[in-house]
Amino acid sequence: QAQLMESGGASVQAGGSLRLSCATSGYRYIYMGWFRQAPGKEREGVAAIYVPDGTTRVADSVKGRFTTSQDTAKNFLYLQINDLKPEDTAMYYCAADRRPRYGGTWFTRSEYVYWGQGTQVTVSS
Image 1 (cartoon, rainbow, N blue to C red):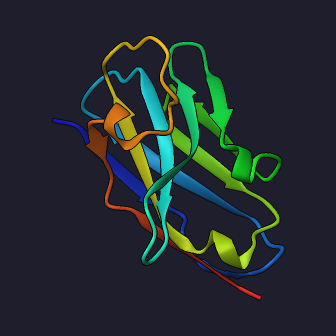
Image 2: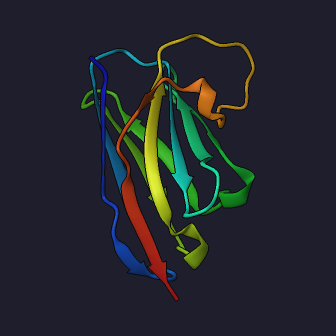
Image 3: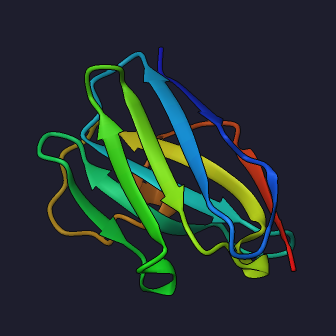
């Protein structure tokens, strides 16, 4: 049974940094991603990783501030967020999928079957 559990969310001041973690178990995933959803907005993908070789993608909207990485030995996925801005305030979700794919954005919700419960990030100015 797939389990994804996020942690590391907090209330921080603008300009600060956070590292979110996602503990994974259950399956050997091929793709993993980070999404966020602010109140009243659509869930958007911000970073993703191809687990077998660690290739990453970061959404243009957060490029330069967000990075994702993995610890395959410990089955953890991380999202490092630097220079936090109030517009980064959102619930952040970890997502995973076992299906091979050809093409795709890596940032579409339908590309991921398994989801965590989310961790809240609140940024004050």
